[in-house]
Image 1: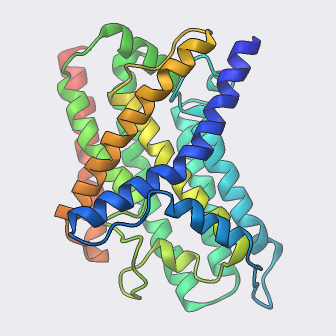
Image 2 (image 1 turned 45 degrees about the vertical axis):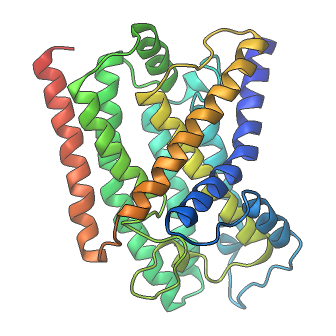
Length: 315
């Protein structure tokens, strides 16, 4: 383990922590513009975090240590997920220790703790949100695994760093299986990040909210940690999508200059991806909660079709 790899890993984590709220602000800004509304500032997520960190946390009378610790565990899981995803460099010390399957496990662990914390205080909204969140996770995780397996068949490995290196070395190529996997991944990413058409991060309507119902009882620094973790999750999914389908521009060497060169490429790809996400949310309508299983089942079937097509083509 060289000093260059350690510095690349440290930079990867720092960039994720700093850029994640900016990505959220970018998506929210374009979403408002496309809907002909007054757009919030690009730095609004940072201002929200600053305000919440300086507010006092109000806890329910019977809140257990699980309720207090869940935001920290959730933020830790999302930070570790961002550390595993090769956004700037493939020379990461944590990469050999965890592959794509462990990455899905990190998302599931964060979901488990925040859902348990929502049920801990016994409110109706918390229990409702936890049940809906676990339903979405139960359906989305198999679809995400199928997407990862479909792409890993081409690269010959479930390690994201290996996938990035091998796909980048092959150069731009059109794989039918990857196209199916890309559509499936988009559907899963929308569901996992509480975006339209599965959920609306800006709503507090009882019949539609999922993510917001989980965090209604949080305030102060605890709520700030959850909002930061939500931005990190969106950043992590964006990094996974770029690693699987647009791996070019990621540094494969140990030179610090190569990592710094990969930073503007990453920012450009995130900017384009954030704009496309805002477009998708603008042209989509919110689904009824009973239609969400059909939405995620479609993602699972597309990913499975991608695997079958890949096997038939003999890649």
